[in-house]
Length: 204
Image (cartoon, rainbow, N blue to C red):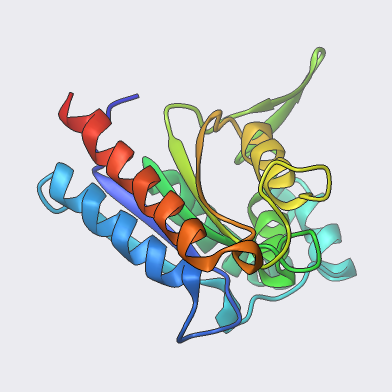
């Protein structure tokens, strides 16, 4: 996987539009990645603006063979199709992951549900599911009040790592601004150092 991004998919999920640690840090990281790659294209997806949740009609449409879907089923899947297209077009993902009550925001979970599509982002094989989106990398920009990233009570980063691996993305790095309640300045500095390391690694 190249260290230079051609197309970056930025996903923000914080409920806060201003004063959000993850939004501030995703902005900073995307700027660094663009500088490394001569202004890579950026696709912005703010899932906090609202995504549809999977419902019975969506499930039925998704499990219908594409050639057999009627107009209503195609329309039901059209937004999910657009999210998958964004994901496929990007070689680098920058995902803001605030930890809410030990897990990810509901809006980010909705995004995962809408892009985890058999035949599009993964496939079933005799050996089990196989991700179809290899040769991509992801950065999880993590922030929390009292939950340290990687701890026994952090179900957010482990879930996102597994969800991304499920669709074939195994190059996943954490930008860690977690546990800010125990030291906000330390948490921000730790995350900024992580971004500096991303820049240094590309220059090496």
